[in-house]
Image (cartoon, rainbow, N blue to C red; front, side, top):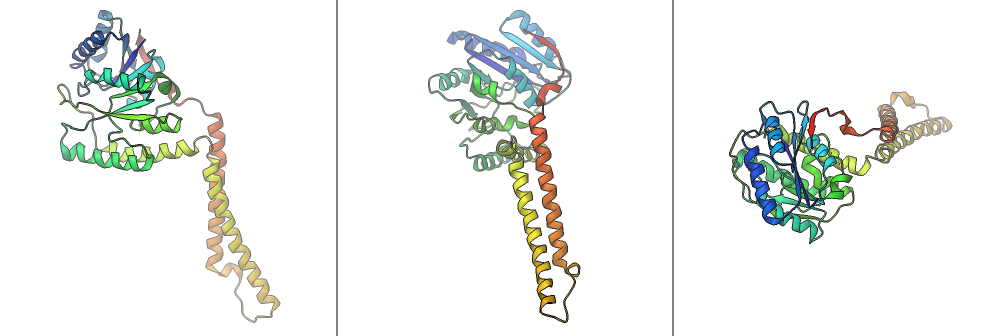
Length: 319
């Protein structure tokens, strides 16, 4: 199979027939063998019944339905598990991503040998203050921290080599950082393509201001997990050891100072416990031991943790 198209969705009943027809038209014109995998992330409208109808009419249309809303990352991760195509395309279901971009994205993966190609909505039709300007600031920050030269990390329209999606795991709200996850997994050839952004035709946006706060927290998380997820002791253990040693050296110095004063017959000297520096040293030592313990526990958890996405309940699945 040439292409698998994974489409996560939530309450997009109006757009699904039009999107499917559009994809079918593009695929048939180019002669691709393909599958469309809709992942219904707990929709409360008629989205699932429409997916079932589309699947009955076209064997290339497949669907997965969650019992409740688990989020876009979980939907993508489950969709990635069942893909069969050599190239995997992801796109949103709201018709703002154009299926006409798929052939060129496919070409960049197969001919130019990219591991991942991310779309760039250079011209957007979103309200500038509400979405456009914060998105640019968010992408600038992510670009500086991750060292990946992309303009639009959160664009839903992306293309991947099959082994990329079979290797990485997307969980929580990490779908914004799939290029970062892929890079840390060893897939470093990441490209970008300017894609057409269209106005929303049906339904309402799922955008919320909390995505920017959560986005930065997720970025810190993914950078930490990428570097120290398998070896948390390398981070916590090092910090804890240094902190404990600093406190220990300060305490030792205070004790030696007192012994020197006694040896020289100094008439007045303070008790070690009378000095504020002693309590500061004690605090630093305790903090160091806690960090070390956190690293040890993290190491135990990382060695025995199971896959994160096994909790997802899929109530319906048809092929």
